[in-house]
Length: 283
Length: 216
Image 1 (spheres, rainbow over the protein chains, first blue to last red):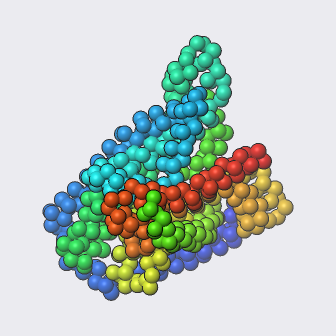
Image 2: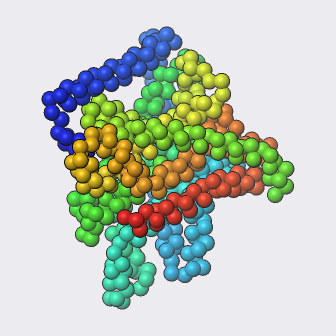
């Protein structure tokens, strides 16, 4: 790998780098060894602790938790995206009466912690935990989707809308037929990245007592005994992270594919680079 | 309204603790994140690898899992905390550092290639190129995304409320349970205090973004 930041390493630099790599690797190995030793002292690696995974009901409970996580995330995503589109159209409406209140509402939704919204819906409206989780995720993510799509529309060349209006489209038709398709394609990486955030935020359901994956871990640890907490947590966390990494990979793949196809034919390499800096990724 | 006024001291205490968690975790995350970003572009392969794996894993870990690990699993493994704030700060700063590293790295990539070439051609070594030429410019372009990450950090600190730390969300939940008849008012009060932090930060991010956009 060559970089503009440093010379192509010569023999001496390569040696230094190799030594540094070995030392760094040893340090990391040492840290890992310490962790493993600590864990071993706690008896984590005793076979009986991991034997619970031979029991079908443990996997069934984990599966149920995972199912709850995925169904809440899927439902929330399916509702949040069209709602985000609608909010975005209202937010950039020509009428100030619609635009300005919308702006305040979006700021409000984006500025609040998702978990607070979930609790608000759970206690304020007395809904089930599932509805509270989905509604909290929908409200927050619709606001974020609206802002992402708005950024996409604003990044389009002015001429796109002008041309649409010039051939006699109404303002709404120009948005729907000309601007939105380009904006959505252009912002696809950010939108998919936000989907990952949505999936991650499903875990907040744990706090409002929704029976998702982490809650399943807690329930099993309470039920089977705390000595099983670490194995179950470890497996559940690995499942969660593996799913998230796969979805993130899809986002990266779309981004690569998108920049090759030069989103909609009007995006240049330059604008995509700008967007990447502006959107270092949702948190 | 009375509920909020009566409990204003509690809200204030929670607000201060949220602020404390955000500031301390923010500082740790900025330091760790910048180091990770520097490691990510460094010539040493092991550093690059470590940084890549760290960022990839932490960015895809749900925050609740990170908190659960720090506050529930770690104590079981014999790492005891005097206060749960420590667990919260560990979870928040390690999690946020991954996002900061990504933002700083994209900032490094946004600095024109000529800058690095010029620095190298006058004989600077990697550490000098990075610390004197690239990072100062990169940090300026990444300030708006960094502020956005810090806004997210303020909001994320609410998860601490569910893990034994009485901050704004923790108190909000407690008050909501105690005042069953005024739940909506209590939680709107909590939301107001969060907005008190996030909205000004958002405005700041927008202003800085506009300034930087003109400068470039």
